[in-house]
Length: 360
Ligand code: SAM
Ligand code: ASE
Image 1: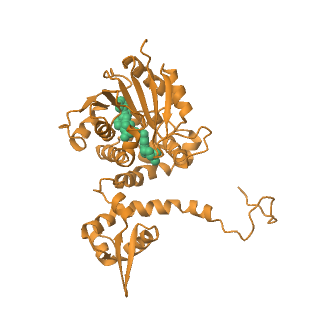
Image 2 (image 1 turned 90 degrees about the vertical axis):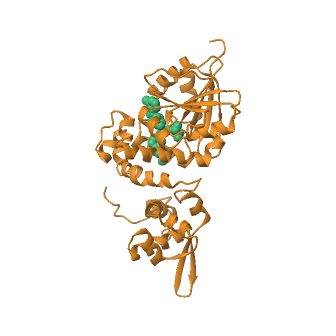
Image 3 (image 1 turned 45 degrees about the vertical axis):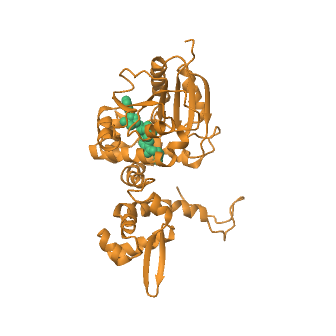
């Protein structure tokens, strides 16, 4: 596009001496993401946690195996981002984790988001490199970004065993932050047999059994996911959590009085969602329910910004979209569910509940 040669102001232009703070912040947004991803990947926050005392740039660079100059710049930026405390001692500078970094960015913290940073850095960032193509073509960019066929969505997402474990870790950890709010948004204590379709690592299932001591949860997922979850994530000594392997579009669904679908429908087109919900409706006991756990868009699409951005991510990475409560209600009603209600949790993921009538 040719630049406008005539420099006379157009009506509505900001003043010529204005500094475009917000626009510049947007231009540099990915510098911030990448700084955080790299500090996590190198183990800066982990090393500082293990040391239990402030460390110099020299000590940190040696501990993480990186150049001194690069480490100094990275540490300075982490200081600017308020992820590290900077202690000045005469000529010497020492760094320590801020409370936020210690709790959310060290890899072994119970509320760690470390694995989310690594999945974002290694997978999502690569897909977003092709956001322009995704918008033009209206489809995901697995083929360009990773050279794998995207015909079967989860075959692409699980392009290797290592990639599958990375995805599962990323999925697992967000529930450390908002799992409890999600499972308690409605009183689900009347339900005893829960089936968590696409339940992945079982993280939400664990929140379920701790919030509702009398329930049993069956986690339904693809065989290799269930196998990895058993090995790495769920202790099956918890008698109330079981795995059931299968394909929810093809195989019989276990009997249950509550089916949970957390971050499932947003992966798929409306057609596939209705196909899946109709199968659930058929399997569901009369008087039973289905619980959707999704990040809801405002009815007019005006926000929240995070969910608008997640919807772009569903474009580059999946086949679906983020939706409003009314859109989920239409999908549920299309499959036969009634008395559909939703609750906002204020914590990214919200819930929609639909019922299957007693009489039917
Ligand atoms: N519910 C989990 C959560 O919110 O953390 C995981 C959501 S993840 C986006 C989608 C899950 O659906 C994955 O665990 C994936 O393996 C599973 N999945 C995808 N296609 C499936 C299919 N055809 N049958 C069963 N599970 C499937
Ligand atoms: C999916 C969820 C996610 C499929 C791919 C995904 C998430 C990241 N990649 O069902 C979690 C939500 N986060 C974002 C950034 O969209």
